[in-house]
Image 1 (tube, rainbow, N blue to C red):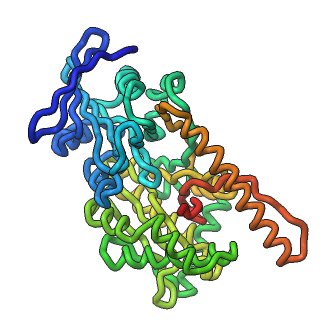
Image 2 (tube, helix red, strand yellow):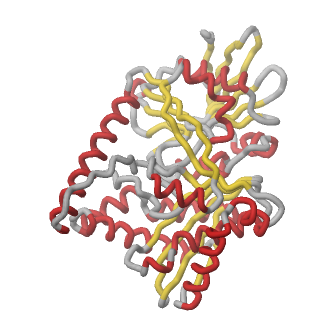
Length: 408
């Protein structure tokens, strides 16, 4: 539907424009004032950590992205918040907007009293007539029904996450969601780790952020060795992909909404998880394992269970375990820990088919890297080659985490 709109800039205030939607006036303000955003978030029962105004501050803290969120004020008094960021330093006709940018989780819409399909229809029509080159929206998994009609107006990218849904107690969750064999394996893992001197701590402090980052860099070293990539190059790419300042900013700005778990062995951090909390929901944002530590410790699983226990006992409704990037082994791990798969989509409103081209490039690059790795591994072992046709281009949680390729 065509939306006639008039723009006016108010000196010293957010930009305001007005449009009409099926004969009713809608006032659009950009960016969204933090206080109003928080009020809407407090009334939306499905709000997630990625949808808080503090997360917007984290996304824009480095200066790479600037805030272009929109507040839609409807005639019936309801308010909609579209979280959005635009890459800095580009003219509007070349601009890229995302909700949220890659590596910053799900965005989408918040709405007073909860999201409705008609809310999505309004915002989708507004985005479809945008003058920017590319706008992508990746709503949360539980908003998928409200967004499904947008597949007719935008290019869609299929997504899937695993989610642990909790009940009355953690013991009830284990009994309901895990097999007897899986529960026995968890107890054995905990006993073995304790006997080996593995200690798990958690909290939110600068020291824990640094410990998490140390594990991340050692994971990058291990991955580089597997691919015969020089260590200094791998670390440079790792720091550029996930800078320490990113984790420091998130931990400091979210405060109690961010918690870090570290597994220590002989006084050194060997595994780390960082999780986010808001409302009744929780997200496993990143997790890393030092792959030089003994595999028998099952460190990724050990920390995952600790995170599940804390989240359930703290009264949260669910814990999102993240995407698996098409890797069956990771999907199996999450299912074994009680995760249920949820399908949703990312929506791309574009003047040129950039997303389709980007996906094709990433797929070909992934296939090439896997082929090269398989050839090297085969030559070293003296056996036949094998190519992994999976697509590990996405960050995942838990186990073998952050298998997204270290993009330059």
